[in-house]
Amino acid sequence: GESVGLHLPTLSVQEGDNSIINCAYSNSASDYFIWYKQESGKGPQFIIDIRSNMDKRQGQRVTVLLNKTVKHLSLQIAATQPGDSAVYFCAENMSDNYGQNFVFGPGTRLSVLP
Amino acid sequence: GAVVSQHPSWVICKSGTSVKIECRSLDFQATTMFWYRQFPKQSLMLMATSNEGSKATYEQGVEKDKFLINHASLTLSTLTVTSAHPEDSSFYICSATGQGASQPQHFGDGTRLSIL
Image (cartoon, rainbow over all chains, first blue to last red; front, side, top):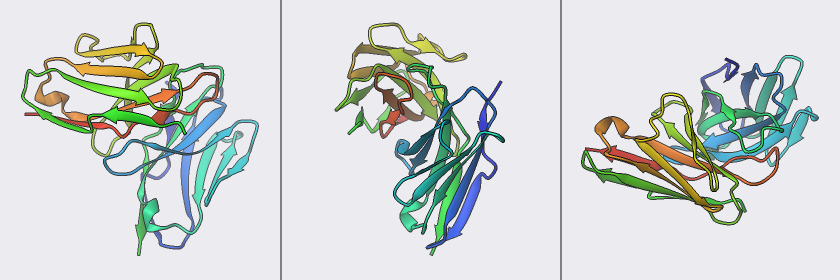
């Protein structure tokens, strides 16, 4: 079946550098995407979302890019800090899928090196 | 806003015990709640979807008699693991969405269940 996947299962970056976490999706009908951050022993935390009518959306130190042509989603974290160390999940959904589940990717572990 | 509270955060109990986990949306009405199971270093595995006032929809392979879900109000859903055994030990996470399309899921902090 269709699924969301990630190119890199682990990512190590130097503190202060920018991080880029990638996600590939295969359901062309998906038009709503979210990035979540999960710290050890906690539930996923909403970071940022984007709808398919947008290519880019910025938050505080984070930017999500959506390339519908190649079905690719990325999360950019500027000036990565130790507190950014976590597992990051992308999730996709169809906006007409009221109350239905999102499909989650396998996750990418981000490790920030001092 | 959009806070989901899950309780308890950690429970250890003997094999054969039934364990109830609560999921509450504190500041919004949750039309739909989801229950996930997560194994170490793995992604979230959806167990069931529940809508207020109706029966939960279980994913394939999830025993509905084993994992009882009740969504009696717009702010509370419960998951009861009946007659739990060591293989049921896991991290269980709930999430909730509000009304309308394109609503993000807001997650609780999970419940670590350890069955001895």
